[in-house]
Amino acid sequence: MLAPTQNDPNPWMAKESHQASKTIDRAQRDREEPTKSVKWYQPTVKSLSETTVELFENYAGITGEEAIKSHIYRIRDMAWKVLPYPCIGLFRFLDFSIHLSPDYTSVVKRVQQGATLLDLGCCFGQDLRKLAYDAGPGTSTRNLIGTDLEPTFLQLGYELFGDRDRLEATFVPGDVFAEDFLADYRGKVDIVYLGSFLHLFSESRQQTVVKQLRQLLRPCAGSMVFGRNLGAGKGGPFHMESIGWGLYRHDPETIADLFQSSCDEEEGPNSSAGGNKSKVRWQVTSSLSRYGSASWDNDRRGWQGDETKQMMFTATRL
Image (cartoon, rainbow, N blue to C red; front, side, top):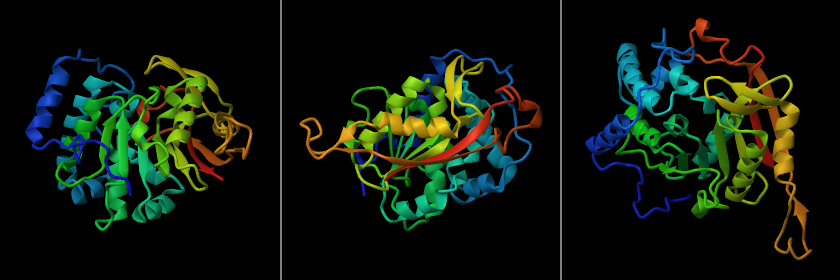
């Protein structure tokens, strides 16, 4: 079980909730109000999924669908001022996408047994809350780590779920492209979750991300990366209007190549000296389905391109 490395045993846990609110308020004042007149901003949701209602009632302690909606709208619009991304504007964070993976059941069991899980690009840390809830009250949350480039999202996660005083997961703001990214955790992570993260970058930048993940994961069989991202029948570069820069969508062949080509370097105690070399190998599985979200209205579909698919993938070190 991996304990936080910061001096504060509970980093990003404000000692009093009003301290975090002041931090968020300052961040909001410093940002220009982004427009809501775009296809990827949806004012409300018609209904919440059973998963969402259950988590907010039983974990966050907010009772009734209308009360839950009101609370979500308030936090969502605060987040929209920080980064007006589709996952914020269209309530995609309410998918709790980690539980949609076909490998989720095995991940929950591994976390219950003490495995360390990192959520890279965690946004509000919503998937870690879902995992903590499903793992049960007898499971320590100190082996859960969330990181995001935007520190305000980490604070908004506590506002969204009201768990400052009980969630022991570690949240660390960080840039995955920094040379010292999560340096204290290298070689100590068992599982990495990437929820709607990889597709934000070009192919070459994605290769850099995977190399960083290799540094973080334990160098042994069973270390695992799983998640979801934009996909297509034929992988390649893609420009998404909502974000404004070039992305890269994967097909099953390109996602497998990404992991293997990014980890083809030889590894071993004497790899640079010419002895005991071995190449890292991955088993990569993936699937493509319709791109969408349980919270979207049908008239919000299509802005991302009709050919865009949703990919679920798992890469396990052999």
